[in-house]
Image 1 (cartoon, rainbow, N blue to C red):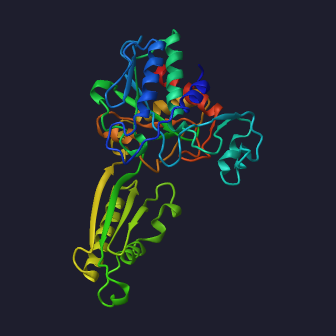
Image 2 (spheres, rainbow, N blue to C red):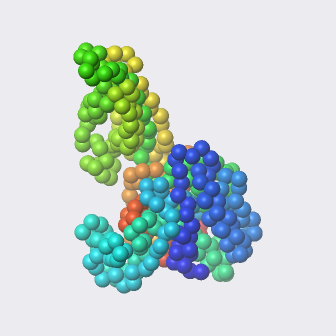
Image 3 (spheres, one colour):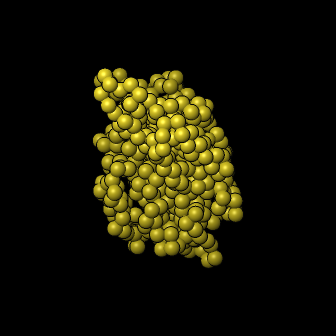
Length: 402
């Protein structure tokens, strides 16, 4: 199989992760793809390929070059719960010439450059799309396909290379990818997650992250006799939100600008809960955001009474730049591999998290490189074939030049 055939095969596996699950992996379907990958790796000659009890897939390509570092390549098997990943029906729009791409004739669903201007930059490319009913799953099955295809090339070739470690992880989309990752057993000196977007991207900076839960305790009473007695937790929740900076929301930020994002609200007069994620590349700015939450809670408790606001803030992950600044040669190797493939590298801050961030703090320096995918986590996800093929080529250059 070539890299495109692999991607089209892998995306048909339903592997949506579930943040409400307490199992590892969060969904058993991820293990179905995991076992298929183990079988395929063994067919390629990766004799030690296996899947552990937590759904992590590992394998080794033994080196043929002395004194070369052991390089790891990592991609994740799950897809985002933000959109359905069941019954994915991909197809290829060959030689895209601009304008709308019809995804679903029956339901008149189009992928339009009016909505997604990035599409216009891929005129002349072959575009892999969905039928508009599900996400595609190129995030991150494109990474798996590129790694597996590069592995096949290396195994069947005769060019000298160092030892290569492969890993495919569950639950990246819900922030648990490294939870049971065996860094010591993996045995790589450094690694790359192949999980980026636009062609040429290399990432070694991500958000510092925290989560905040705001519980508002109210007092319900019949509205007919509520005067000076009712304390409506819904209205207090609205007041809490109103005291946060308006222009520090995701819809007003980009690049290195952080945000506080209200992503869930539930409740009634008696009790309301707000769930926020807090993000900033600068750790000091994140601390200021956290302090602002504390200050607002204190103010409202003084206004409405003690324990009206119960605030819980927990750190989630940190910016891997802290670690990778001491390992920038890894980033430079990736840049060189891209240039050799005729790809112009560009360094982008990740406006989110990545397995590589947590793995870097676990002792495995791990920047992220592109797959070529666009519009991830939604029904209008797509990936140009030519970008995916370049991803495979870049991986091969990384392997041979290590």
